[in-house]
Image (cartoon, rainbow, N blue to C red; front, side):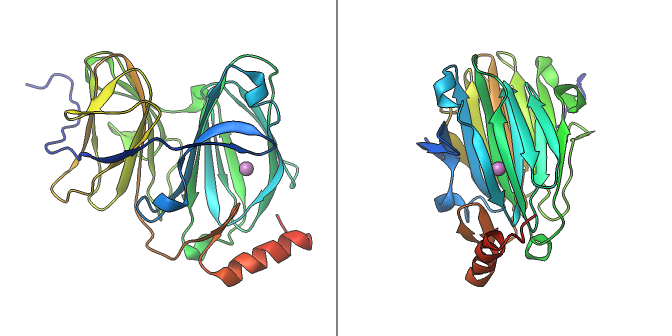
Length: 288
Ligand code: CO
């Protein structure tokens, strides 16, 4: 008898390959690890980019991300630790603090800044870019800030918990749902010996990032701070992540759009003509 009434996954996906990512700088010089970039955009469609940042050294993050544009996709910023202030050209402003998330749909265009609101201490988090379907790329921009306390939490067996940023886990609906790409975004918090069973629709692309502790998918250990692409085994009905020691795992899945992807920096459209239009609109002040 299963007393915990937890979700069952009969056949877990496996790790197809792990990527260490690339140490880089972005914004005005923020040090980060780019775990997902252009080379994986087809494989992990609808996800376009994943950055992980984490440093105790203010010199790595103080410069922040001054005014910059986005068009054609959504950004999800999940703050593990620290404080970041967001301001955009439409006059919106928000503070992202420890455990909080900002969901932004850039749509036809946003110009914004993301600046640390701290001069010392650790700052850590993820920024994920999620593509918009062609029909929605020029939609009106919007964003929403969620404080840590506003993010739904699901409980599994053995003390396992998931912060449900998007999608559904253990019957708990996440903070955000999106129709076209059906993203699932979980921050798994697993005590030593605990597992998380997460059903995943066949055909959805999925990956996991272990960012603290030790965990595995089946017998395959997750490499710390690497991007583990999960395979598309058609017989699999989900994934089982097990903690060998207390662990934190960022688990992401979504429905591929299977549309052309043309990226030029912070613009991601379907054609080169649309990219040229974005560059021109920005230059001529028609953005946002
Ligand atoms: Co930005």
